[in-house]
Length: 178
Image 1: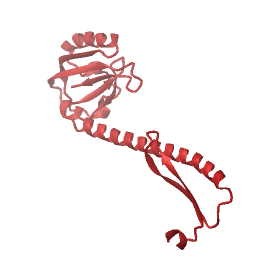
Image 2: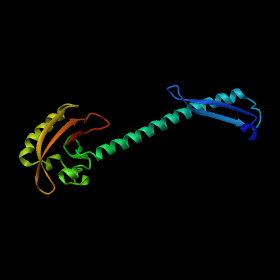
Image 3: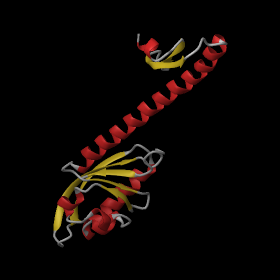
Image 4: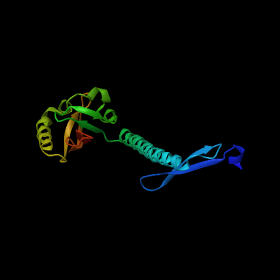
């Protein structure tokens, strides 16, 4: 009755099937007259259906990645621990905002600066040695304690764990949790 009220005389529908063989929807062509070459219309619709199903899957994957990124950001930015990334020279390339509650610095005050600028001078040699060791092998994890310099000039004992992800194309840094 709906089709008749819209003066539809013929229609063809092709399911949109995911790579996991799940139906995601249906691509339908409605026409006010009998379709003259139904097989041709079906073959064209099948091509469009394959492309549309692929686009729907890509969109779902993109949405999932955005959701996961937002979740990750919320976890990192609301953690009591600080998370930082430094390059092979020890320069900060990323820091979570927790650095402010721990050391008093805003994120933009440490990005680009060297890790060793924030370590108490007597502890620099041992941390440099550990840093050299972590550089030697991808995936290496090292933990240590050191005194770090708070923005107000005081020293604060910090326990940290660093892991070498320099060879990981998606990270390309040493990740430090402290």
